[in-house]
Length: 317
Ligand code: FAD
Image (cartoon, rainbow, N blue to C red):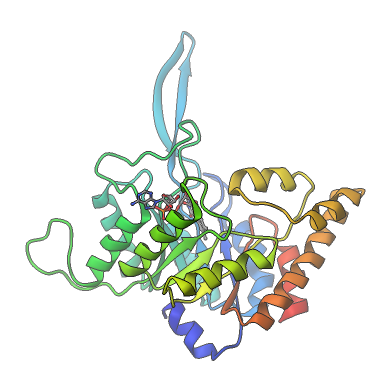
């Protein structure tokens, strides 16, 4: 089922959903799936699974560097989607990224997903390689998410990269990312909105936002989208604060600003256990206001332990 269809069927009722991250290569998949089992009580119609690019690692010998090879530290997105659907009877929404893939490799992944019966993909550019710092496309790959939106949309119309005859149509519902606090690479908020609008014009069907801790940022983002003529559902992405360190780590990684009030409250906490509890209380307030506003879905980034997400969900659903 398409995410937009789940939203339509809910008739204004806010849905619950989550994003999970594949384990580090070689770690146990059952542990990950067990960790989200308690969240199934809140009936997520879909669960997102992130995709991770390869990172260059140095292979060293006795005399120093032998070679640099690309390693995917968190492989398994497609397999995890299959397991999720089988075990929890939910729709899996894999992320597909430009970084580290050629267009042909992407086409093959999209067929894997289509054959698995997956109806939705979240289309992203992908994070830059850590060692490079700035995003570089693989030779023969896409530079911007908008180009990948076009590739998926073309497949939905039976157009493949090299096929001479029309292919069987895929029918993916296409999600994309949006940034209430501006994407870090964007020159300005204005150009960021231009690029967001282009992704919609090229065929994207819904937006999931980067995490934010101040609902006003989300409300302003939605207002601006509507003013730009973007009418698709805008799903807020949420992450409960869990440690004091996250105040700087999340702010740095995701380029966001924490509200001063939350920072002050966190500073007062004597331990991370208290911060985790504060994160739950803050999350509950955020969610209640977002539900009242009428958001289609509350989408949680679980990032490992999900007990705090369960605590929030049990108080708002
Ligand atoms: P784009 O839409 O391509 O935009 C990237 C930047 O380029 C923006 O600053 C934009 O304004 C600018 N831009 C766009 N088009 C043009 C143009 N034509 N000319 C000039 N500038 C342009 N990363 C992963 O690696 N794996 C994941 O699974 C993953 N999941 C995510 C899920 C969500 C909900 C979100 C919000 C992010 C996720 N990310 C993931 C991170 C994401 O890949 C990064 O934020 C990335 O840096 C940008 O991706 P994008 O799709 O927004 O890029």
